[in-house]
Length: 114
Image 1 (tube, rainbow, N blue to C red):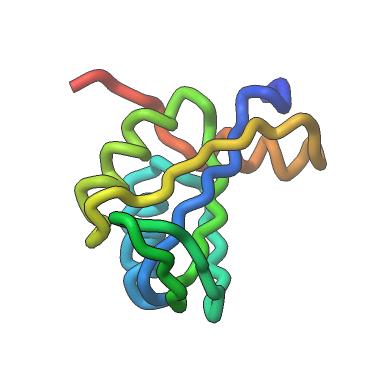
Image 2: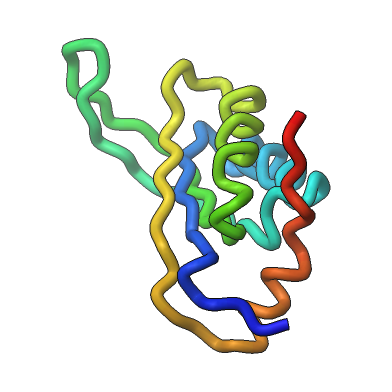
């Protein structure tokens, strides 16, 4: 089942720790909203929040999914995430290794409306 590359997304989500990121990532994969999530620990984030500049340790999730799963994935991240305004940024996949993209397509379950 060959899928066009533009049907896939990489979603970036930061979390306050690698453990919290792992919990969110595991839920997304178990619920078939994502095929895979890589966790990059030890990241340093400098950002402005509520009028002040913050400098915090965070972990980054690099989540691979299908475009049709973005909205339910985002809603699940918002439900599980401890931040009041978590980063959820989706980037389109312009191309890739066809066998990997086919695998990705098979791992993200059918999106159903609830």
